[in-house]
Image 1 (cartoon, rainbow, N blue to C red):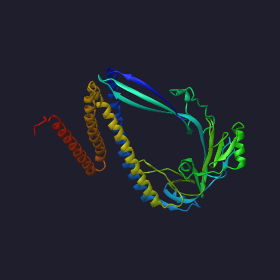
Image 2: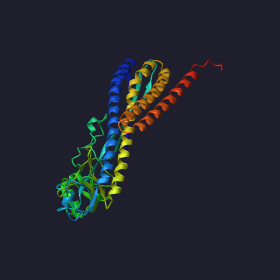
Image 3: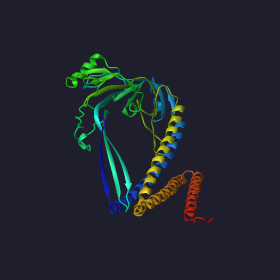
Image 4: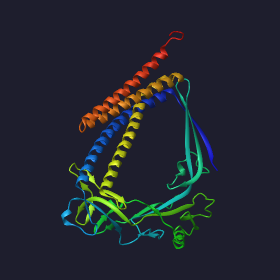
Length: 392
């Protein structure tokens, strides 16, 4: 059953003005940070693309059954089965499994808090914020500290004494080659582990003699899995099994590890199954592009937030009359968007000038066109707002 509580706070216009001035400083720092992130990301993307192109032209596919000394220091592509000397083991609950990595997944049934705020601007520039706190019971793999809840009474959580943990092989073999954790950590493909009755009993004993039962391929610590109570646990396991993998890495004796390119980047590619070198480099190039656009989007979003903080004092000043403040914030939002577009494109173009000047000019031209269109739209809206009623 959920419970809901509400709290209302009021902030004066002068306090808001002071906070917006502090926000301006935060915005300037955020702008500087995001400009740096944009420039770093573009340089990283270009260097990674050149390193992958270099590696694709140098890689040599070799047999995993033997080590050829003539490939010492070269970039090699190896495919074969991964083997280990001993199974993985959870020393607390006694669960064993053959594989590269064993993961203990733990959830506890807990009270959880959710806060939802709604702010209204009042005449004179002040603000009234109403925050609604709702409490519900649910499963979580991280402890919910009920002492930090807004309303603690009736929502107390016990300490989460059992936590998730990972157990991994420190070394393994790929045919005749030795693999360490730099490669083993990149092997994916987790599969659930079906617990036996013996393992279930051991989990119950290790949990302090609590009642343990099977539920959804895992162990349930509590009285009734269909009616959980605060403090009950769900424990399950997943394993990355042994099997065929493909690796593109540098050969150093019997070991495989990162290969350093001529521009200083490292190449280390790992895929599950039998995958050709061409396919692995194609996937790496696609991943580089995805990462580039993901970081671009994040940097531009926070760049916009930074510019929003910088122009926010204008809206607060105009909030003496709430309708005027809303109009000013709408206009300042457009200004922040234009500044984000120009600053982002300019930063990207400057970096690309060092590598691809023609593409950089195209980026600048596109940004200028977008900015010009937005400015023209703003001017047209301003003319309409100044037009006298009844006159054409």
